[in-house]
Length: 321
Image (cartoon, rainbow, N blue to C red; front, side, top):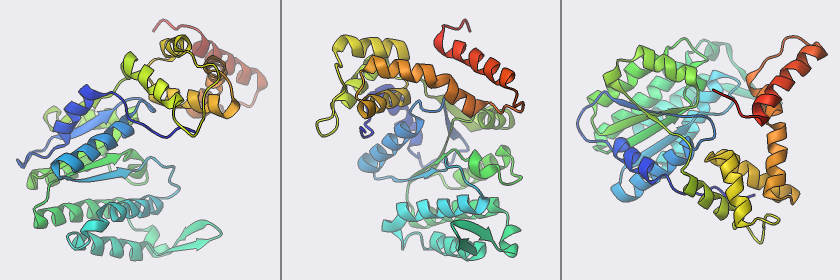
């Protein structure tokens, strides 16, 4: 299976690098990166953070919250783990943050039994969003005390918000106030959830949010990514991957990097050609869509097959939007 590589996106990276870089001037403007799942938001964001850290000496934090958390405390514990991993070289600087994290861990008091986390009665009453607020606030306080610049990316935050009664606007007010009080930090939100994005945009005054929509890769970049992936690995090669076949595949699937990775992984795993894998993925795409976007209440076979047939037509035939 090929490793992740970053190719292209020069224009997007140039814009985001400037947007991520704190100016030192207090600002309430939060950056929101939107786009469909699999389009490369996380990969592009991490690439920009690495460039800032390497070239500008900026402290960067990436909080990936896109996991299917089963409880709010699980989400908070994972957030703490990520904070600790990414600030371990600055432990003295972030002593305030570490004290807050230890208090939260003690407050949660989880008991592991047979792989399940059972929360004690007193911790079940604790609002996890207050803990999240404490983490972010103590992080900014430590930054200010050390006079450091930082960019903090929060990816798929709606997975934490769904456990409490916080509105997206409540979150935005917190981030804006922290960013306004300390000009050397830039908050960035990343999400594939269009409802979350719509709620934030509808509730937040336009001057307080900058939305950046990440679309497909350029065709030449998509071609280069596919060609690069075909050459990665210890002797792994896709059967009969000619230049014409590579070009035809990109013409058919476009510049979605997630789909390109999926195609190459399938070809390597089953020793099939790119076009064979593409046909397989296309023919099974409607099944995946069914699992992800539909909840079929009726168990009637007739209803089930009707829905599948409609989705199959949508996935295999051109659709006039």
